[in-house]
Length: 117
Image (cartoon, rainbow, N blue to C red; front, top):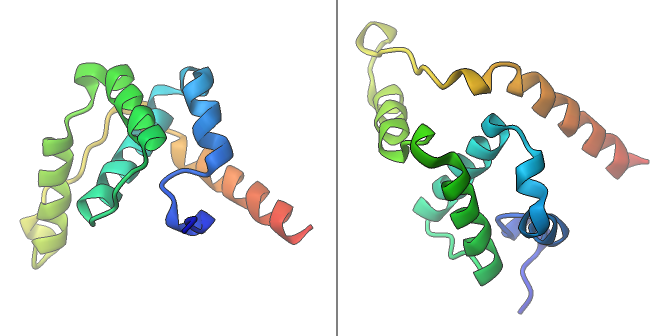
């Protein structure tokens, strides 16, 4: 049974693009965000395909020492389990994430307009 597009970790056409060198064209922060999203989905029980595993491994290789999933996991858990703002420490992401939100919003709005048009 084929998975719906929403049930996949990456869109099939994007998976092929990423394996063909597309990951290298992304900024470091964009690659790390993809890796965080992939690892989060896998922690929720998602089983990646062989191609998706290859993309995830390539993302890990490209991130190198700049990506520490345990540190991110600890910080997110602290944010989620804290009772008040006074008990939390701010989540400080690497500087490569600066401006990423605005780019993500722009890409999202482009995608939504493509779906509507």
